[in-house]
Image (tube, rainbow, N blue to C red; front, side):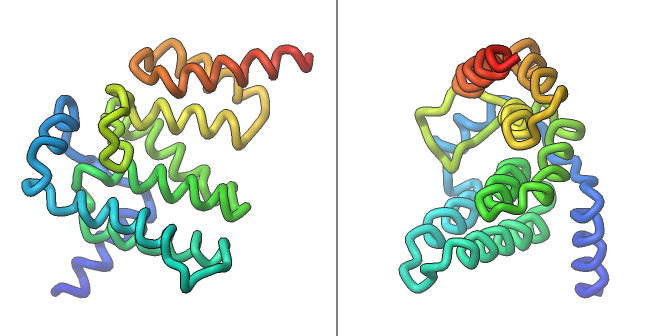
Length: 181
């Protein structure tokens, strides 16, 4: 039965059918009560431990390991508070390992299926009340330059005003893009 459950969850992950709980106003709660969110420690550990791991000097190997651990994290916590962030990290590490075409499905899933999910940047207290989809729009526009880029950045600016940092970057990218025309 466990094997069937794991296969089912893996299948769900592959077709991006996650419907996580609403995350509005939970970021503050998570920061104040981290013991209530055991997956937070694992989510942070994947990122920090693997980047600091001196045994893996090859960057592409490090990226593969981090991507694999985040995929496993999603399988183990399919409805967890950090699934969207894990998908965003997967996309980032695919891009860093020069496999950005593999990042696109993760960005599209966040934008389409989780447009209002709150962004929780590895527990950073400095982050504003941003939405994960806002960052996904910024990255999709940046990594997949085309006519869609300007639409993604304009949508980010219009629909995600709380994503101040991403908006600042998108405005700079838009200005650069328009100056090339």
